[in-house]
Image (cartoon, rainbow, N blue to C red; front, side, top):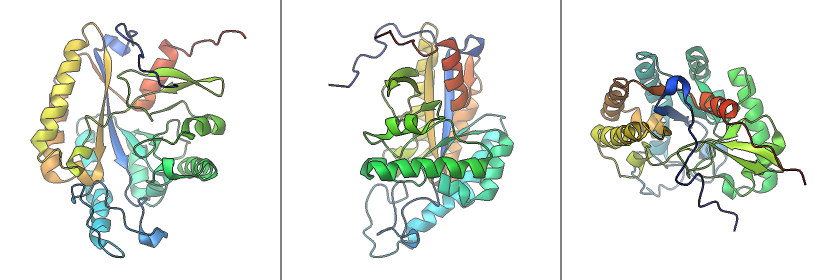
Length: 303
């Protein structure tokens, strides 16, 4: 049994967020469009996940041009709308960027760099790492890092797989080297250290709860659904943060929240959280750096 079902327990550490903030809030924009499985890229079928199909496989024979268009909407329109919402409020973003998607969209890569948003590597493509062999996964990690180094001007320091990692992912990240953290975990509301290959490794957990993916699965129907759900999570953690400060991740997808009716819910959420003092709205990389400085990796006991 190698699962940790206890974690920090009843007494989590004080994260000591900058300025004594009650809550660290990180918005994540998933940039996947152009890297998803597609017949033009040699895949056996077109990807339709997290599109307007609402989780129902359309079973289109051959190339699904409708699905391709829904993905393209995210990179052609949704990305720019979301960037405007955050720029208008001078708020930072973390981009979970698939390397091939950013490589194929130089204007978006330039806009992300100019805005100062950080990029956490979301793989070479939007693919399921738990379906890859170890050798394939090792090569994908190498290729993704090299691509983002060239596209963004610096290598990524964080990593996040599509949905979940393989049993090898974390070890391969440490083996590759240079990563400050990964976010392939959904098990906590604070960062934590783990040990990989005898080395300390930082985990900054993500969330599929406060996440617009629920539009693509039919759980959210309106922008108000997204707003109300994320607002309640924020308000609850803000109250709790008087004694136990936490971290809240809110996940966004360009082809989902980028549509106007849904973007209206995001707009209301950004305005809501902006009314509160004592909230550190920040990039994921800054959370990782803060935790490493304030709660450094434990020193291994001598053998």
